[in-house]
Length: 458
Ligand code: SF4
Picture (spheres, rainbow, N blue to C red):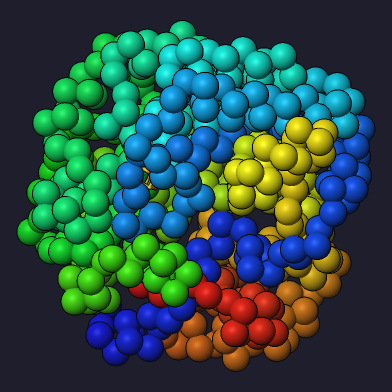
């Protein structure tokens, strides 16, 4: 097992982005207009580009203390409230489709949250029927939904299968009772194990499990038990995320006691332990924090270098452009990030007025696009071919990144990178610090450090 010295951890455990987007969200413009979004939709409509579609369902019955997602917490969301939200999402879908000027084929469809599995069978059926009125969902491709094990049963699973979903993503995080108590999220292994029997009975094969390391009261012993239990469930894909502790931004994270958090070196040990166990059991390590059985499409995407990074982490890359529907949703099309309003009242109001509920966005400059490509090469493929860069951007890599030469050299000296002729390769040790490597190329971190509020990289 690769070990990393305490000194290295102390030096490189600094605040930095996860790079699910570049430029990162704090750098998007809050005065991004509806007109600008419309222009992008029109130009996308005139192209032959393919589409990924994301729908955000923000409902959650209770707050998990670690979570930084955009959610609405309520004891219950009655059917009439669910209807109002779905009606608004469908209104947004109709507006978007009208501006695009025709039906587009959706190569990747994902419902996330929040807790999408909180929706009733009736709501799920209404939502899917409505979306199919405006877009052509490709059921041969990925049709995925996030599941909270506390809000799903056999009836809902059968409904999801009937509606054409072919990938389920379960938020598990950790099975230890002590850890669950510290994060206010309770679901026993027995409950999830019984649920997985139903999942398989219904016929789902593509199953993701999300885990988090670095949670309060997570010890090696407790985490080992969680990993053992995950193996008993045999998911086809595992995402192992680092806990992003940013109480200065996510205020409810203040409910997590600092002295209950594992130290950076224990946190790294938890990650290394899990990574080794996953590999021993036949999972392939995919980029920074994903693991997949060889039969899972993510493994293929990694092998043939078509892996992609977006707001949902690592994905296969079936589509060129990405549209988000729903409160706070994010999209990326025609080199532009777009995000919807984060207030539910504004979301409802703007749609009632027939307006797109966009709140902020960013049209990428040429420099943004170049740096985005470099960062994603490093984060997705762990290597960068300077010849490919030169062919793509008609400029030498070393000339363009002259100011970054010291940062690249520092990463090489730390053992994170190997630079040979025209190839930069991330080492095994560097894979654990890949966010630090990516930060070398992030111009916004140099421009305005104060504006950038992120979790620590380890
Ligand atoms: S982790 Fe999931 S269930 Fe918990 S608050 Fe966040 S979105 Fe809701």
